[in-house]
Length: 437
Image 1 (cartoon, one colour):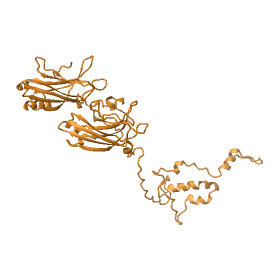
Image 2 (cartoon, rainbow, N blue to C red):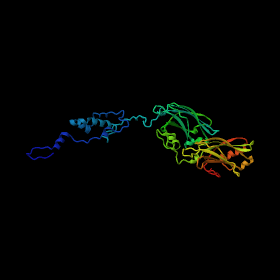
Image 3 (cartoon, rainbow, N blue to C red):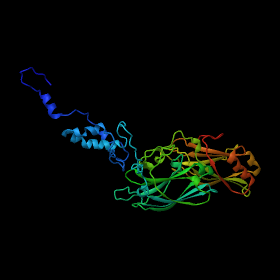
Image 4 (cartoon, rainbow, N blue to C red):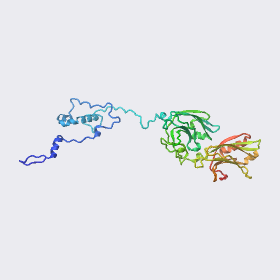
């Protein structure tokens, strides 16, 4: 306050006047809002209540002693201090006060609540279910996949319906070579296909390490095909020559090691913009797993015709050589050494396929005793117009071969007039083969 001399009229500045009228009491620091709302996991504990009153004979605390001296302006802070006392009973106050500290009652554990973002138990209702069965024919090295029906598929079109179809891939190494698909059914959410799709050339090793991916997609004529849902079945769950039936809820696309992660609404099929039908392939994957494809060859020495009958039955999972992701394959056979160069035989060309079926047979007139000195070379080629044909892969059968190739040749020599079929893996290097056509 400004000092005045004797006889001088008292004057008060506007600042002092405002301070007297507005702040009659001591100035206290403004509380932070976090002091009133401590961080409990579920708000206030259910058993929260005011602090129990102190016994009559207890010494009065400074706060209690000054309660009777409160000015009228302190009434506005009554609610604040009540809140402070409420939370102070549960350890929210910064420091312990004088006297014995109150005993904290046991807090009830917060109830578990489902995570809204990760809760996906309604996927069955949203995406639908799929009924199918699988059969591994061990004798014929074939996997039969019967797609029966789907129920309650997710609507994908403006009319509230969909045009669904099912496609299959073998993982790892999904490609057009092992892609199969059903026909498309129009304007339905409950399609019934009853189609059997077959993979040929499936070995016991494939059944251990392969997984079948079954996807349901919606076909659009003028837009990209859309993904609806999928399921995956490890083939090791199947027993040889035993049909296993499944009725499974479709799931969202799942990322897999070696595959690019998928997103909801991912494109399907030929429109996907990704190689091999919309499934990304890991570049670090060992290419020797799939080699160049497989071929089913039959051998039989006919006593009646005095010759070796070589049957080219079919190929499976061939390497794609053309820009459209397919090949135009055909097969050539040679029985070497071929002094007269008359042992060449060639099948017909199968257009735009990676799983051709030939069912052609060639006869080499030769004495049974001379076969031990011969080698059968089988090569698969991609036919191209106006340029050299591309070599896809080959296999050599004979007395100098190894593994299954040697066993197949030996069984043929040992069992006259008996037709023996075996699957063989094609390799990209064929010793002694001419890599031009």
